[in-house]
Image (cartoon, rainbow, N blue to C red):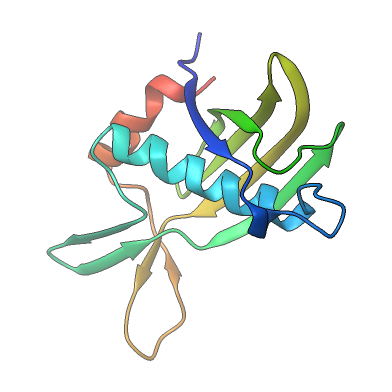
Length: 139
């Protein structure tokens, strides 16, 4: 059974449209922030450095399905777990709730890549120490 990571975000004025409803793009920013919170909670980051240089996690896919509106000033809970921990990629699943009501559910798939100046990101195997820290959140 995976561990669920939970964090909170308040809907800021800049997250909303003219009607005071959270804009769809804000859900994607909050999913990324929640992923970063999970990583920090276990001593990781989306940018790491090792003997060979820099590793980072470009996004390969992202989606979010919306069920109910979130509004300015509301406090949202964001639950994060890992649907798939592969050799080179991770799929994070996010669930947005407010007072127990589900508002949205989304996914972000990120690929572990070696970053070199002037070269495109090169997909590489997720380092063992990194995967070990993510495994408790995986199904």
